Length: 139
Image (cartoon, rainbow, N blue to C red):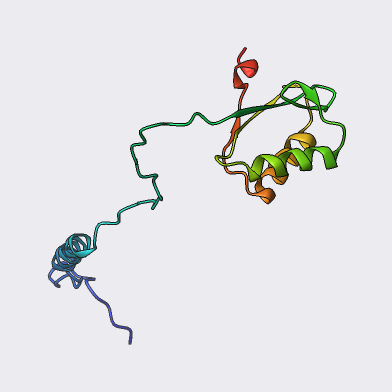
């Protein structure tokens, strides 16, 4: 004999009332959201400190151009070889204060000579670098 539930009109319908369970679940969810600490997305930076100087010294600016033929120019003078570039960067790194290097690659130049200048500058300890000339890419 099989058990029949709710087969007749006079029998009570047997099912679980889920409304109180949903209410309890929503209250727990709200409590969980309230108790979670607020996440702050912060990036810690070492910002420079302003120290007023009575006689500010303007740094020397060295213009490094990379031509479309991948030739490197140091203030308009062609750099003969990689050793010559390294010698000039070593001299610049030894100066106090260090000169600012403004690297200006042509839009048709390849990446290799620009990467060479950047890598050698970083390896030798030059910290004042800037890439100039983005206006040539605006159309």
